[in-house]
Image (cartoon, rainbow, N blue to C red; front, side, top):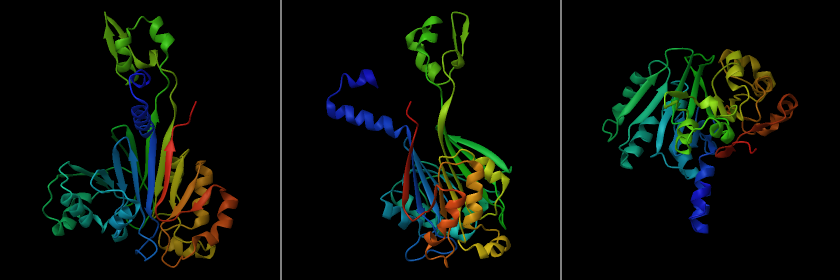
Length: 327
């Protein structure tokens, strides 16, 4: 954008700069933090992520639309909805969300992804939302681990351990290495072809093959958010959360003495989540999906932070803007 800036007014420069920074940023909003049922002071757990003009929603329980309204974000531009599993507190808000999208005159197709049985479940819920001005494309997971890519955003789904089939998600933005100007010039590649190599294309010029690795430096650190609820601790979660900038994890029970109850119902305690965050070496952990009986989660954070200091009892509407590290 440097050459463009030279031809723009100061105000336009600021606009270009803002757009550039938005393309280098992952906006994360935990719309709600509750489990089982919405409460007057706590909406059900749902995550919305925005990147480069794309919006992804994970789970859509009752009240998700209200939580989104309170945040000031619109459901119309949602491109993908991911479901962890099909319990009501994670999916019962879908019919209303679809109707709101339709009433907003959305016509672009919507992609919905989740465990096997997703198509049947979505069609059943659509009995009360039958007429929509857009198509719905369902992608069902066939494996315990599956990766999908949407316009530069990589979604990794991984099976967790709940009393029904349930998945966690890691959302990642990979970052290519820097373009090596001296290497491109030494190879005699004309400037007009540089952009294609930067985008990962292979070129054939005058009988010679040029690949991106010939002019690009080593890959740089990207961005990663991992989200999992309704599960016992698993090694798979630790593996997929490894190195995450933000780890959003179920903390159904803050009280250590409720560990047996957590085991019985295939949920997790704060301390168990903290242990996984520590082993995964994440940067920061937000706890979510609290039991309705857990009124003041912060009261139990002392022991959690002894295990993993960068732990937080998240609240509805918490937002984090993740940006690439400056060099």
